[in-house]
Length: 285
View 1 (cartoon, rainbow, N blue to C red):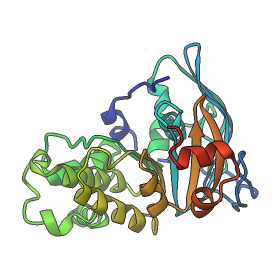
View 2: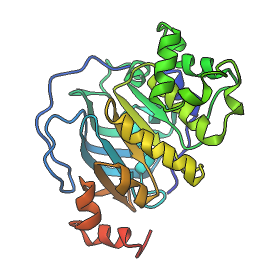
View 3: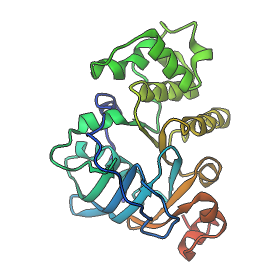
């Protein structure tokens, strides 16, 4: 089943955490996996429904802090649905219903006292298609700060553009429209906009799928750099990309099931499940 689309701009008007709860106990992935102590994010038996159709089934996954976690699997298997659970973007889909627990810093983000707008300030998101606003490069980066009533300074904008590996390319044209940049530059501008409010987590939904190989390589290098300061969770159809840039990999297969979650090297070299090996070796998918 295909996964419903959401409005990319909705994330930018939201981008801050609930007050973190107590530290999480050590946890393991539901579908095997190495021990992760105190994951920053942990799903427990997450089910997602779009009307009567079930998109995710009992997904449990611990996501480690300041590492890159890749979510792979065939189209329609629930990867993006799970990603949108993390910062409650599924709330924007009227037919969506989420059951189970999704912990961020030990706090269930679906508790009644959690403000989803505040949550998204600490869990930013970058979409598949670059979506810069029809504003200047400077104002694109400052946008997320302004809608959250955060201070906007030249230093913060520069730091975000440097963090997105874009500063050297645009520092002399900050007043020009972000729409005039190349596709790869636009995507890095969107990443700068996402990290400007200083989130803890950056979610990326196939951020390089619409880019050429050179731009894709720059995005991959950037993701590795971002993991030094942020927790990165990326959905990708490109298994080679997942193998290159991620520390952990979750494999979703048909039916919205997380079949396996483990260190990326183990997933690609010695998976536990035959279905995962068949998918990775191209026997289906």
